[in-house]
Image (cartoon, rainbow, N blue to C red; front, top):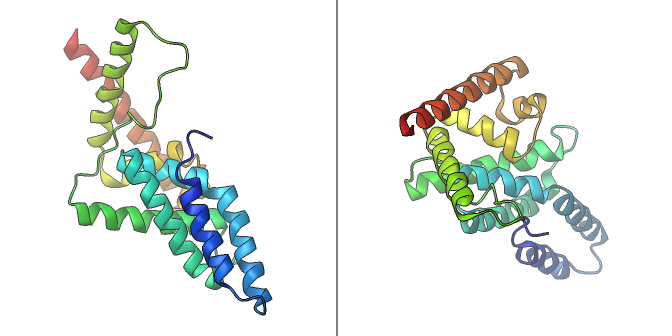
Length: 200
């Protein structure tokens, strides 16, 4: 599971919390077991979303751990009737990423070096150089998008959510999400074409 970070670190937090619960408190133990299942099912897309947003794999790994620590602390208050697990976790992830970006005072960019890997068949050096240039051009174009457009692109292609799920996470209508997504993709396409044309 190469693309999934810090599984042991996140899991050890869960297990340590589970061990700290006394045997007499069976209800809490069952809750933590439920959280363990939630973690195993949802951690991958939470990490991909965060990696898209921060563009740094090490930071994304650390922030994914933070998200699940926060989720574990709040799990006893979680009500599945109010929000699906995916929505709940991505809301925590969005808030965590926003806090992180605010504290680090970094511009909200999304380098794709850590998100899009080179295919396993070794490309020739010229092919690899060309791919890296394309990824860099795409990164520049992504960084030029508005904050909300970047976020929707991250949820769509990082967390692999559909428009309805994105709407639920960010509090917009499904139609709004579709419109913003369409315009963002058009901007990316045009920006990418312009970059390529300038280099020719």
